[in-house]
Length: 275
Image 1: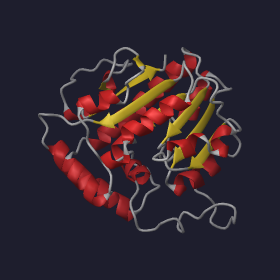
Image 2: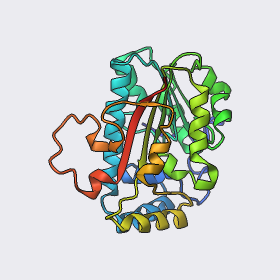
Image 3: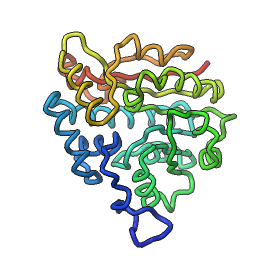
Image 4: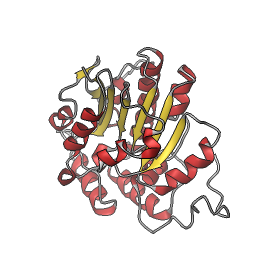
């Protein structure tokens, strides 16, 4: 993909968008060995990796489970609408690629607070009428579901897959992540799905606390939550098998030879249906 053309007055310049502050989307891009990041993002990534070197492996697990879940919902559950919140920068195996490979009529809206995501999305998706990229703040979930660009593609009278993949740990406790999920749950009809992944506090891994400290001090976000806290996101929903599990264990396509490592266990998630 190519970045937005800085000479095009209708598209934001990547350089102009660099305000010297790191963002979660671009730090995640570093973890995926992407090129769409700045020195300040690489600084956060390097500090995080110094605490937990497995973070690059964890990021790859997060992308892999996204592909498995989206394919399952589009190909086997008949879901044709996907709202990918905190989507991050486009990379290989995007939600729309997986969903539309299973069903060409599937509609996908990516939402991220980082305007660089919009700039790249415009370049990547200009010829795809069933996919949009929207700049919005998921901490204001009603604004998201009522956004005209969202509602132009997503029909909230029909089942939607709401994706919160690796984003809720960037919502601070005082920003009420459970309330955000509850608002979204109330906004979608029966038969909708929620797909959530999150950093998980491991009792035998003290570096998870140090990673949280680094992320909060350098990025301003990065709350590592307990399994009990994660389970509350799924209240009122029916979890699909195998439940809330380490990401590589959610319906793996390959045999997991060692499920005890930090790289496997640090990020967990699940998929649930609204009854």
